[in-house]
Image 1: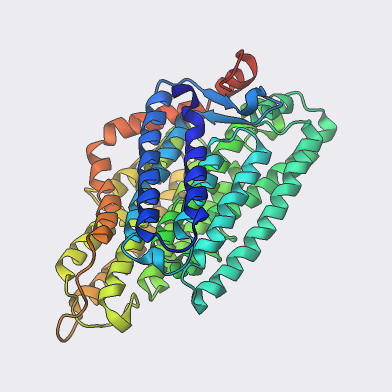
Image 2: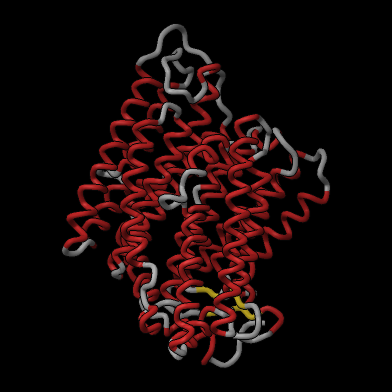
Length: 502
C-alpha cells in the first residue's frame, strides 16, 4: 500500500466524486457521509505524505510503469506533501460546514467538491507541464460549477468573468507549453531543466517567450497585479464553503511559480536563470498596494475577506521576488497561515450574515446578533491573525518575511507590508465595530448548526496552533526552501535513479 501512497490524493477524490455523481438526486445523508469521510481520509494521507517527505528524499510514481522523461509521473517532495496536507485540512473544514445545508442549495455539490480536490492535488504532484495544464483544467471546470452553486445574479455575473478570463489563461497556457516543447523537445520538468542547460543560443528567445507566457498564466491564477480584478467579486459571490476552498486556488498559482521557476529556470539555466524574479518582485509590491486600497474601500464583509486574500498574494509573491531560501521559507510559513485563516473568515462571514437577516454581510448598522458573543470572539481571533498582530501566527509570518529582506529590498517591503497591515487592521476594526457594537434593537437570528461552528473553529484554530508549533513548522519550511534551491535533487531522482513505482 505504501508504494501507492503518492497517487492516493488523486485517486481518492476521483473515486469519491464518481460515487457521489452516480446518483445525482436524493440520498443527501449518504452523500454527506461519503464526502466527509473521503476528505478526512485525505487529511490522513496528507499526514503520511509529509512524514514520508520529511526525510528529504524525492520520490515519484510512474503511471503505467512508463519511466520519466517519457511517462506521466507524480513527484513527492517536501513542498508537494505540505500543499497536499494543507489542501486536505482546508477542505475538511469547508465540507463539514457545507453539510449544514449549503450543499443542498444546488445539485452535485459533493461530487464537484471532490473533483476540484482531485485537480488541486494533481497540480501539486505532477512532474510535467502538460499534466499541470490538465489538472488546472480539471480544477477549473469543477470550480466553474461550484461558483454558480445555488444560482443568483451576482454569482452568474462573477462566474462569467471568471470563466472567460480562465479560458483565455488556459489558451495561453497551452500555447506556452507548445512553445517550450518545440524548443526543448520535452514536457517533463526535470528533463526540461537539463536541456535548458544545453540549449543552443538561437532558441533562447523562444524559451524566454514561453517562460514569460507561463508567468502570465500563473500570475492570473495567483491574482497578481494587474490580473487580479476577477478575484474579489468572484470570491465574494461564491457560496461560503466554496469561497473557503478557493482560498487554496490562488496558492496553486504561487506553487506553480515556485515549482516551475526553481526547477526549470534555476541557476543551471544560464542566461535564463531566475527569469521571473524581477517581474514578480515589483508586481508583488503593486499587488500589496492595490489590495490595501481595496481592503479600505470594501463595504461588505465577504468583499473585505476577498481583498485580504489579495494581501496574502502580494506578500507571498514578494517572498518569491526576494529569491533567497530564507524568503521562500518565510513565505511557506505564511502560506499555511493565510490559507487557513482566510478560509475560516469566509465561513465566519456566512455565519454573521445568517444572523443579521436582511443586512447580511453588508457593513451597515443592524440589530444585535443572537450568538453575537461567540461570533465576535471568533471574529477577533481571525482579525488579529489575518492583520498580522501578535501573538498569533500572522505576526510570525510577517516577521519572518521582513527578516528575510536584504539591502534595498527592506526599503520597499517593510513600509508597504506594514502599511498594508495597518489598512487591514483599520478595515477590520471598522467592520467589527459595525457588526457587533453599533447595533440597535432586540437580538435576531436563529441558533447556528454545530457543523458550521466546527468548520470555522477548525480553520481559525490553526493560528494559535501554528504559534505553538512554530519551531517544527519553520524547520520544515526551511528544509523545503533548501530543497527547492537544489533542483538537482529532483533531476537525479527522476532521471538518474533506476526504477520507479508503477
